Image 1 (cartoon, rainbow, N blue to C red):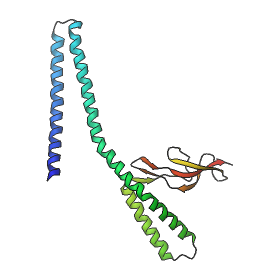
Image 2 (image 1 turned 180 degrees about the vertical axis):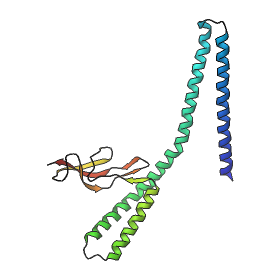
Image 3 (image 1 turned 90 degrees about the vertical axis):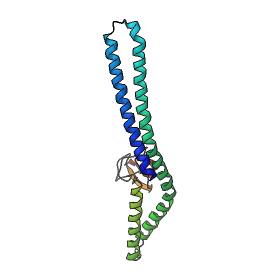
Length: 189
């Protein structure tokens, strides 16, 4: 019930704001046309024109304030999701290491490997619902905004400044860096 009333009140405020803007614009237009028709010199018009300039600046500031007010809840939501996901990342890292270790074992039962793969797919799906994405690393050009180089190694396979090994996955959430990928970067041949 309360959510519907809030929505109606917000819509009503938005309509009132729009009417106020239209009323203000029409009043300014009328005042400008009256001012233009008056036989006044520039010194007399100057205070009025300065007032119009100030009104225009205030309108711009009001639009900016509204935009910030609209964006703040989105930013807070992203920060809350990032906080939760940061707490989960060590568990995800441990699971990935366990899965890699299990795959390396040649005598591991296929049913267990399949179970790990199903759980891994579920984890990835949940993290994607948080708008979380894995930072591409191996084979990608090194980007100091997304990667943390812990080693530089010669490589026959990769050119200089290309990530040749990933030690720990990096993630972004809603386009913002959550954790850089820890990588080794090729120094070339």
